[in-house]
Amino acid sequence: MNLLVDFPSIVKKYAVHFEDCFSKEGLVHFKKAISGFIVSENKTLSAINRLVVHHQVNQSSFNRFFNNQQFDLEKINTSRLAMLQVQEATRFKAATHESGACLAIDNTLLTHWGECFDHICNLRDYVNGGYKWSHDLVTLYYSDHQTDYPVYFQLWEPPNWEAVAEYLRQKDFPIREDKWQNRHTEVQKWKNYIRSRYRLGRKKHPGVVQLYQTKIHIAERLLRKFVATYPELDYPVTLDSGFTSSELCQTIDEDLQRTYVGALREDQKLILAGNKKRSLKDFTTQLVAEHLAQDTKPVFRKVGYRLNGQLKHLYAYTANHRINQFKKKQRLVIAFAKPDLTGTPYYAITNQLNWGPSNILRLHRQRWDVETYHQESKAEGLDQYQVRNSRAIQSYIAFVVVTYSMLKCAIHDDELLSTIRQRLQTETRFTLPFLRRLMQSEALMVLVEFIFLKVQKGQSLDQILQPLIEAATY
Image (cartoon, rainbow, N blue to C red; front, side, top):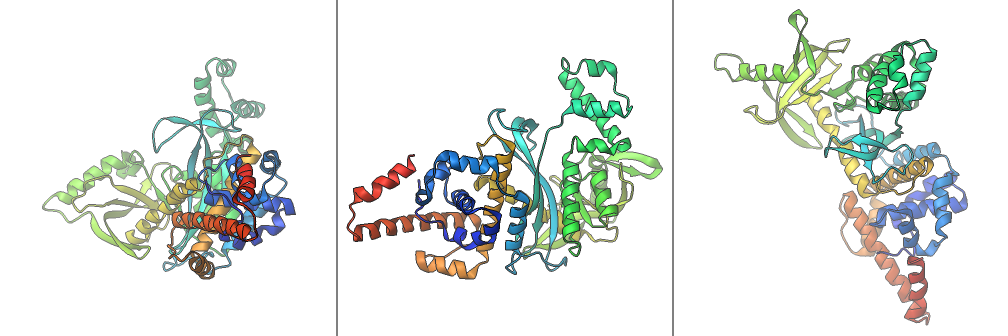
């Protein structure tokens, strides 16, 4: 376990952007938390408090900082975004093909053992399979060819279906009495029923959304907030299949007047001639057969696009189609990675009916930046909290996002990196894991220097080490 007798260089450099967000004592707690997320392998509050020995406080004081939240998380996030705008490499770019600037919407499960957390729910894990006790974090994410980071984020909260039903009943929206009476004895049947009634009821009584926001509603709120705050930034929005709903796409297209590139599942239905509905899977099978036939023109064509300076190739079919539940026609791309059209195809749509497949596929692939963020931010502790109440969980997540953003700034900070290189006599690499290891090495060097200076002043090793050991094992 590393011991910190000073805050890491990255924290000292960038914490100044947050000075007006905290009291004097709160700023020390904040810097301690960020330092722990960078350096410590154990991201619990108790481990972080033991780690930072030069600002050792009672554990309960550090816990109260998270639980009582005497600070404004919205202000902290605004300061974080302002910090990112200082450097050319990390600021928001103009929406051009050269910059590659876009937004992505995605969610990730923050899994835990047990139910003793506010708003935790037994959710299906689509990545690893099964159901797990989790929080679900929805993120609006910025990405360009130089950098990427979260903009806004919000935890999804499980619905209070009784409150939803009561609201709809008061509005004279029909709720079956037998379902209502058996809601406590046939819980799953009740949830399935009221969920379907909610979907219909919110169209006639949109006020019910105040009682329960789906992840689609959260995504819409985050996008509206971005457009209102940065109206000049006309970024395309990339969506995975979980967020490519007709409802959200219509909002992006008609209300926000922005471009979107979404992903579809193979069971999504196309509406073909004569209003016949056919799944994307079956439609693709037909296209592949036509392509491979000897006497027909190629249906899939080789398409190239550049992503982060690298040329990628796919084999794509592109046309405008009617998609089930979508009000307007969509530009559809079906693409394979291999020229023999084997393997799993990509399905992408956009509201830009004149776009070529290259731009659509580039944006479709660029959405992967947010997936990488979820992996890297979990290394910083995003899902390792043990705090239980909602306020503390929100603070913890917000500080992990600040940590990630500081590291993103540091990657492009030539002055800071030069100082670290000279001090540690090592080369720096442009990856977040390497920066974390670099800060761990710096912490070790600072500790050795601290002990050396104390010895030079005549103190014995026992005198020097005993307070450190006591602090670390408090």
